[in-house]
Amino acid sequence: MQSFLDRTLPILGKEGIETLSTPRIAFAGLGGVGGGAFLNLVRCGVKRFRLAENGVFDPPDMNRQAAAFASTMGKTKIEVYEQLAREINPDVELELFPEGILAANIERFLDGSDVYVGVIDFEKGADVKAMAPEFLKRFNIPLFTAGAFGFGALLVAHHPRGMMPDEFWGLLMKKSTGKGIFPSFVSDRFERTAMERIDRAAKTGKLATTSIGGALSGALLASEVLAYLLRRTGLVNRDIVFAPRFAMIDLFRAAMEVVDVTAD
Image (cartoon, rainbow, N blue to C red; front, side, top):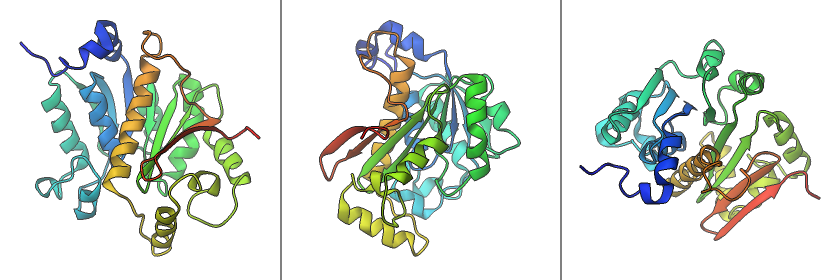
């Protein structure tokens, strides 16, 4: 009988498929980036997840979110993604945190996890984000995150024994000028007109996004998580992109870079 992994097996091999069936991935956020990344990982054979999301689908989600349709409006995101994941792989193991990721549950959420995927909206969850580095170090797990920039994507990841978010973003700010919504050291690498329009929209309280940026961000994020999980199988022949490095792709500029913020 055919499996949903029939076309993935020749690339990952039996060892790769077996490797992906064991780790537990803790996903905080199932929005425009997180929802797509989650489904990408399920489709590649990752089997064990913790999901934290307290949102409900509404019409603005339909421009970019993988599970946002007329039929899902008003439904809780975590329940919709649970159903989709089980329809792809009935054997997927899901532990749900429908209250979202909070200061009160982050320790339980991360304890026993192998990877933390943190894709909470950048303007939310400041207390949780501040607490995360302590638990990354204590439980020896990496953090992967990504964001959409117009028609592009930015990936930032943190090794538990490496540079943490505060230091990384502090260095970016020191290398940046101007007053845009994002540090210019990052935003200047993306299509200028799109970024100018994103900045103007932000001043009105709206975070402007596109379906392409969301899908690309989810794919980039899922790919780097897979590279980390498969790093000892012989399929990955490079270092994982951890801070102080970050990766960016902009399809409108036809550009892709891996940048080290500590480089002169």
